[in-house]
Length: 222
Image (cartoon, rainbow, N blue to C red):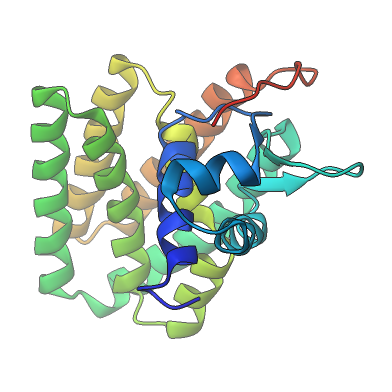
């Protein structure tokens, strides 16, 4: 999909609304309605929905129609396990390389996160949270590891779920991120690993509380 194509425009618009939870789980996405709303062809909408399906943000029903995909308990647990394997592995490599540029970047992200929370710009804080974890992967200097992280759509999943966080969660996230940075400064991998592991476990527990036991009715949103 070309970056300047109409399909990419539709993809970006719908994706943004899904990640901001403006399109809730189970919401039906009607091609003709979105084509009219965004002044594009149904073909462009269809192409965008197929791409979103590949990212597991939407799904096509057995009897037709496209819907915002509901996050299941299995999704939450699988992604947490995958994040733990990839991010702790990346953290170990980050300690090995001791890249001062990455450390500085992580500190800046922590400061950005704090400002966003203070200003009440929580969507910006969520994006800073995702950037923090992506930067740990970047610091690994392992391209294959980074590719696995991106291909697994962990950042998309994390961003979608983090938009449900409460203010107390943001304070804990900030504390944990800064704890990892301080451990990096002190060259203490054990502390950094323990903080990251607890950070991921806590996120899993909180998200499991938000996942409904059964699918609710479908809501039509255009």
